Image 1 (cartoon, rainbow, N blue to C red):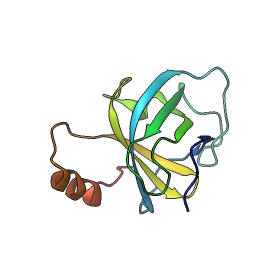
Image 2: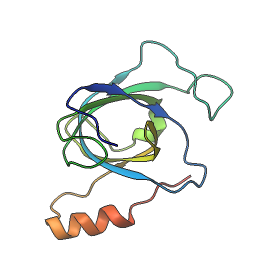
Image 3: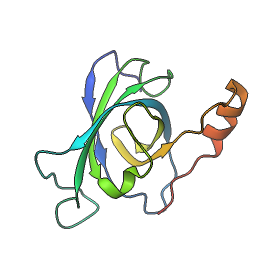
Length: 123
């Protein structure tokens, strides 16, 4: 499933041991405290310390290159990630991310492909 260039919102859940269906190579455009609390299906209450993460897709795949994605997730899931960081969004279905993994710098195209294939979320 691919989306045309647009801004989209996706959901956040914890990985809970699920395998990734999509690996979305992105760059962080904006990272800020979320203004409102959103419910997550994977927890009973509101997300702890909710942050709004907006990224731009860098590599064609599940989403078209250039698409902007926004999601609300717990601050603890963003360790080491800042505006401008290249990240992998791990997704378990078409609109649910379960992890945001910082991508290593300085990888060749072949090394990046190998890294993407083996990247998994930790619970």
